[in-house]
Image 1: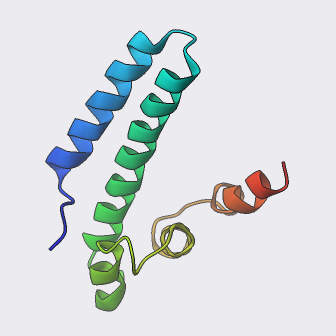
Image 2: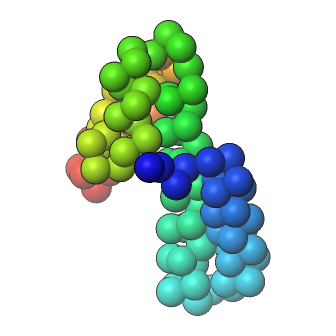
Length: 98
């Protein structure tokens, strides 16, 4: 089953913020901090999609499975059901152009 929970989100967020606080200008340490923060954000958004009754049931279940529900799927559902603005929803395409 899924390891996603509000506790795991909070743990990743705390770990990321702690690492960021101590990273200074060390690139590797900053990378680890950002990875933890990214993980916290992704898990939070997956839990958000999974927890809203107006999201189709099949999507709610899939959102908890990282293998079945990609970032693009997550962004599409957040655009559709979570009021994610189009410009924020297009961040992967914008980043790919850099």
